Length: 241
Image 1 (cartoon, rainbow, N blue to C red):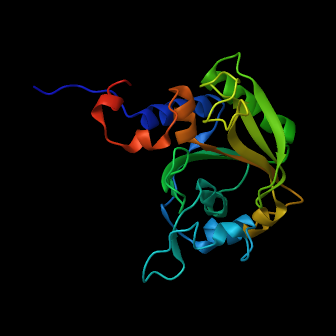
Image 2 (tube, rainbow, N blue to C red; image 1 turned 120 degrees about the horizontal axis):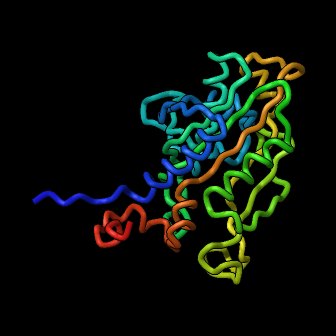
Image 3 (cartoon, rainbow, N blue to C red; image 1 turned 180 degrees about the vertical axis):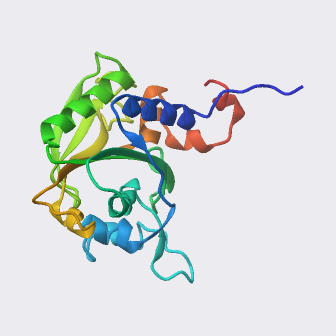
């Protein structure tokens, strides 16, 4: 007898997230898992001496010069811009790889979704509206959202977005490092150097970008306090979903 099981939690989260952004007019695209340093770093205004390029963070492919496993879905930005003219709005969900420690909040292989809009009138106000709409659609209208300045080489200005921890309801726990808040995503206005790498005129076009960790969304949505549980293959755990 074949038993019908539910979708994996990450698959459920990805489909929900993609659906929310599609409802806001974003087109879904994909990019390669194996990237060059140009698209993963250089074109995103990440200099050679940036810590993110350290071998401790990146998986280089043996005997494949300049080939790495992508560390972020942001790598799709310039690839897409090279072949498409603005205006457009896209999201790119997919797997990424980093040499992170294997602990309750980090694993070497996880999932992100990158968002990018390029037009002549994209603004920080619009970006905040898009992300606020996403948070309320995903978590519910009562979710508390916090905006903080943040630094990312490929955006300027940049910001980080936190939401109230769903596990402790803001009281403070191990998942939120006793703060009551969990970092949801990083975002900002696309840096002019990224546009130049894509052969766009930064005086003519402007845009915003954001990146969301879907594993973290799954942990918050389903109140999971150890990210490794998602990849344990334990059917007793997966059957809960």
